[in-house]
Amino acid sequence: FRRFDRQERGLMGPARPRGQRVILDLCEDLFDLEFEWYRPMIAAADEVVCCSHALAERVRAYNPRVEVIEDAVEADFNLNCAYEEKEGLRVGWVGMGGNAHHAESLRPMIEGLGHTLVTIHEHTGADVRWELSGWQREVARWDVAIAPLDERLQPSKSNNKVTAYMALGLPTIASPLDAYLRVITNGASGFIARSETDWREHLRRLRDPALRREVGRAGKAAARRYHLDVIAGRWAELL
Image (tube, rainbow, N blue to C red; front, top):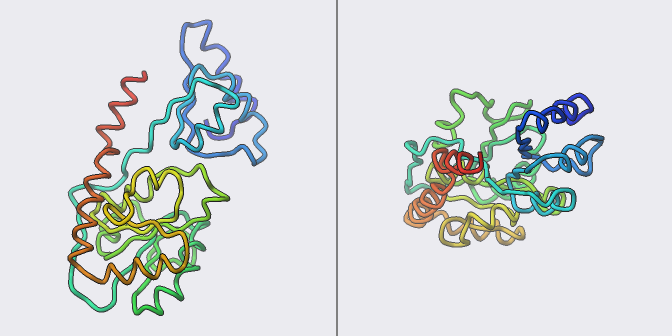
């Protein structure tokens, strides 16, 4: 379902008389947007699968039959960044162009520290244009990955951004989104930044290639919990 409209709600109705279960897979929190049939479709489902625990908590107000199955890692675990000694680091962000302002807000600080910010998305202004065939290899050229956002405005987002970074061995700095906190052990498999001071300090520490390697390897191991095979297995158990 993409539109959550009357027509899509109508598709759910004939399932039960045929002895079929209706499982609604939610990857976006649309409660505060104008989707009239979002709540009724959630309530009508036999089970709702959510991409994050925070989203599941909101859904339970309308349907108690909720399961959390996180997004599978989109990156290739066979790729890995390099951990080189260098003065200026390549600090990167990839995502939807509409969210690029989160990374751009950190550009003055990142460049002020002598690093380069590389953004990858589909909008005008990207440092690198997003392409399905090449984004992973471009990301693997970075030294550090960042995942900034306003977790107060988007508390239900999934962990897929940080797990994609971590699968490529990148030491990752992220905002304290609940889904990120469940993946990253601060200072071990990545870093959590709750303030500009934190962002500066984490970037300062990650000048050390040995630390980047240590954190990157720990992050890659943590991301394997969300490997496609693992997540597919959880779906198979549910179905």
